[in-house]
Image (cartoon, rainbow, N blue to C red):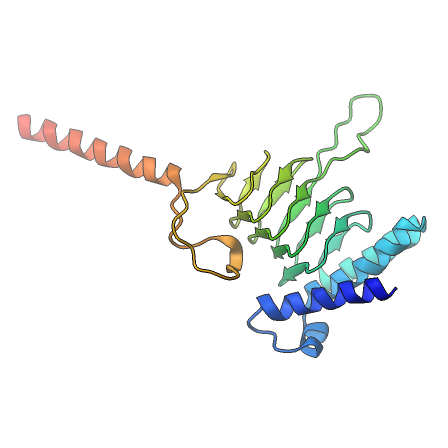
Length: 221
């Protein structure tokens, strides 16, 4: 129980460290729906691991109704976890999350369940998230994939494949951006304004080439 309390304190301090609108532990406890859902998860997860699975599911559903955040009690989540704004977050049963991870509203850490006539897949079917990961609002990370350490996932990205350490991914489907010098410290929503999407860059080059071809045709006519 003492270890669980220390873990919750680290979750509380994560809110203060990463949310500029929160200035104290009391304010975090009273006003952060994401933190409230995490605290309930910590206790429901303890019940889940002790075999009280139905009870833990009922508790998690009550938390979902009150906070708008759905965390399955079977998920494994490291310390320093932070959900900003909270509403609409879904974390599936076999999800594994490392330390100091940040999620924004509307994020889904979802599973891939296949019905093949022999019963549904009940093995690992949700993502594994490394340490110090930031997942922007509305992003979908789906299936039993691995997201490395220090990864940033842009808002509304759809991640369907493994992501290596220390990269930023954006888009549908998600792909790496070209990294430039980033500011030090926590980066809200996970994307630096200086990051360049290589697909957008190629489209810009293609557009320029089309314009040049049009100009050449006009000059010859």
